[in-house]
Image (tube, rainbow, N blue to C red; front, side):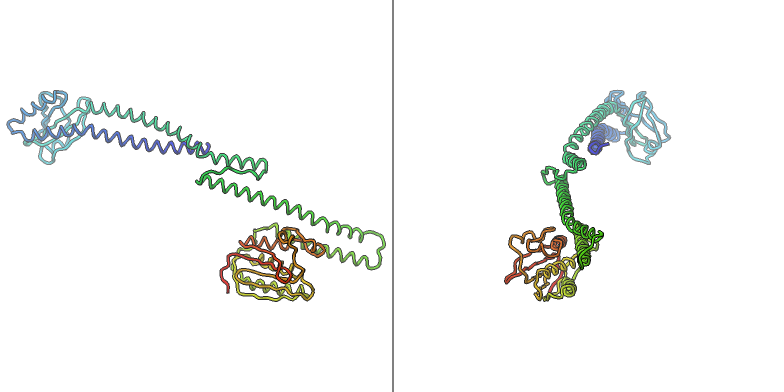
Length: 443
């Protein structure tokens, strides 16, 4: 059964319960209103007879019968021993223990329903002069009216339920229209793989928010797929050149021809260097492919201590460059390993552009890492692209590197809700500022 059918059934069931409950309430209210005048009439008759002088009670009972018109109502006397004395030869009325208790003065007046000669009647029993008197009124007219009302209520309830079911289907169809559009779009994306599909969003209700979230998800998937394809294409392009060179060198080394003195050693050094570059490139590609899927859980990280450790490693790896630090205590919420990788990439990039004996200034404070070198700087036309994957400025194409280091820095910054910018420093060189949001304390 479809969700629309279930929704329509639930709506119809809710309306049906409301109609049935209302019908029962109407029936019992009408029943009470129709029987109330008869009960009032019986009580009035009982009061009149109770206030009749003892010598005139029997005449009053006959007078009551005449006024009631025979079958319309008649009395009966019940003695304390339970003997029933119908008046004017009328049918015998039912007598039970409660009636006898009234005759004996042990109980007061009461009303009840009874059946006399297959007729539904309303009967009152009340004490008069040491006996009990029963007076009945037929309920035939009331029962007939209630029967007709009951029939009409049943017809109205059935019609109401049918109308509710029809309206429920219409309402369910209209309410689920956005869901049908979302389903159709999802099926189209599944069948065609086209992530450019979108759903028209109108309104501000829950379904509109669902459609907007679905569109955002498709947009994110489309961007992720585009980035993945671009990464594969760029990686294939970048790997093609070193693989070709590596294959050529290996083929030369494996051949039987005689090489000039020192040539074999040079080729072996080239192979080792090319393998190292490919290892670095593949490692950086893996880091980029992981994106924001951190292996470790975010935690409180002392940014100044991370930078200090990265500077010590950079000093060992780059002994020809002097690193000058200005580190202030700063704590951020993030993944230590990825932050450390980003800072290390900034230091490596600055060291690569620094001349021998040059200085690299490193500062930390308020959730920010600043690295400034004194190299040739970055051309204005290259500044917007330095954080793109595999982008290498013309001046850097002769230097070692994959063009992924700064791209990883930007990825880490974005994953931590921050940003990274590169700018030309006053007096020459380049300044790169890495900001990580979520600073918890600093000094």
